[in-house]
Length: 303
Image 1: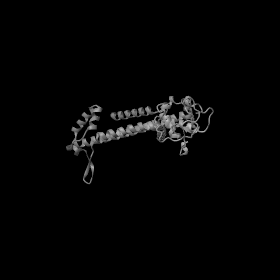
Image 2 (image 1 turned 60 degrees about the vertical axis):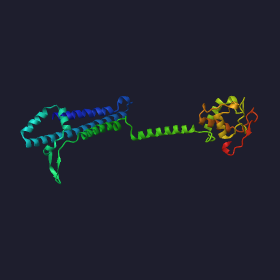
Image 3 (image 1 turned 135 degrees about the vertical axis):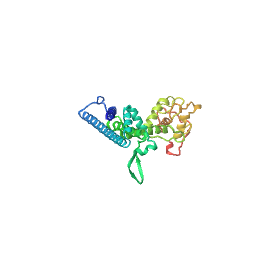
Image 4 (image 1 turned 60 degrees about the horizontal axis):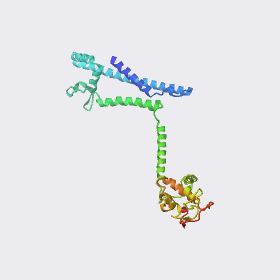
């Protein structure tokens, strides 16, 4: 009986430690009447759950103890006083030593007749042998894991619910898509570049142009210094989005135009080229005389 109560007390202590570990601390939350009531109810459910599980453990230990006592009585009836002396010696051993023996014990084949149940079916009789240690260990591990899991995910605010995990996964997926699209934007080159017409893209292209290109081409693309007028139909290296993009990317060293591919991203060069072409025919003041050859694009997107 003493050992039985030791088991029960030990189990209850473990259960309360587990629930306390995963319970929400009220000091970390701004307490209102509703939140205080919710906290009390949550902890009440935790305590009731712990008591129910502790009661179940107590019942299991009690039934196990009764079965052991019945087995002792049967052995005494069959083998007499010699077995009684052995039982007394066993009861004098420390609890953990007796538990270890019971946990790892296996009845030898020559003594299996002593642990046969009375019932049989089709000529087969059942042995009252101990369960394999690995099975017993897994049983207790799953109980402990179940209590911890229930407390963490269902009784506290620490674990994420399935809906919360879904929302986090969706946000991560959106960020991954944005990063992928950003990389795709930088994969543009003179073979696949297209003309942009969105106001936001053209505004970005204007900002970059004014910061980098005005010393040679002027604020209105009229041509300044060594740079030609970019608003007319004449080009040194061909007009159209692909030719203008390639000129920005690789430059024209013999005419003083540097390569910008190491300083400006490909997607930004596309915006600059699109901004330049959006000002075709604006005829700004003080524009330079036409230079180069007249460009006649075959398609409308090659303006």
